[in-house]
Amino acid sequence: MSSHVPNRARVIPLRPAPAAREPLWRDVVGDVLRRERLAQGRTLKDVAQDARISMPYLSEVERGRKEASSEVLAAAARSLGLGLADVLSLAQRDLARQSRTAPARAASMGEVRLAA
Image (cartoon, rainbow, N blue to C red):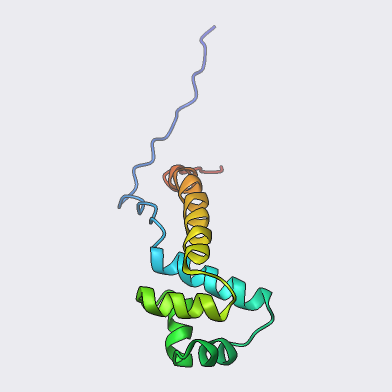
């Protein structure tokens, strides 16, 4: 009686899986500003006027499209009743949380499973 060993297919991807992207500082800071603004129930227009920043520019900062200067970040923070250190501390916390989950996401991206 012979023992039957199932064939195991080896999958070789045509191109390597993309590396996990580290979060960008401007994205994290923008998320903090938007989250704090929305938590206060304030509009983009209101915060921009109070901070003396153009509304389109503040929108770009919140969406991570623009890298704001420390002066702009401080003005936006003050408008939200926060200090610059508060915004940076919240951003650092979020960045650390995102960085801890990045390796798990990267590991799962390289895995290929086939169903027969």
